[in-house]
Length: 240
Image (cartoon, rainbow, N blue to C red; front, side):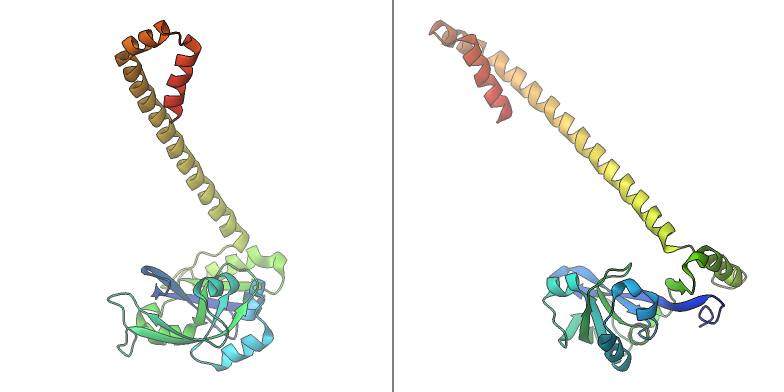
């Protein structure tokens, strides 16, 4: 509410999260995202939430929306009633280990948040531990003022109990891209090391095998096998 009242802010929504058990893979968790139903369509415009779905979401306390990929993977369709099991040790504020949702619609766009999204007020009510927001998404009234707005938000909360670290979304994407590139480089390096280690092991095994069969190869050569044929047999063994 404080951010929404600041000059230059067009829309804003906080993000809360909670875990659930993935219905398709009980050993994995499914992250539930909580967003403000009134502010999300105008804040995260890339999601392209249909107006009818946005209206129903605002009117339905246990309503949720999902991106197309998640709905396809889970086999969910609009108006489905969804019962999600909570991980061991997690219960709702009422003491239940299940969470009931209604999938109101599927949004076709892409955004920084993807998956199943419920109303943040219902999520914080169900999970008291998630009352504190981890992130807040803000859409400036004028895109060119994003950096200035980020600085003003940080300056406002700097002296408070929960100072913020704000930046345009493009900065976070660039940072995430650099992290992905670093991870990819590390994986490629590990694969290269494993490959050359494998080559050394195979080469050592082949050399030992050849040394032990020099007599047999000499007999083959005496029987008329060409050296090239014997060499090809050795290479065939290496490739296998």
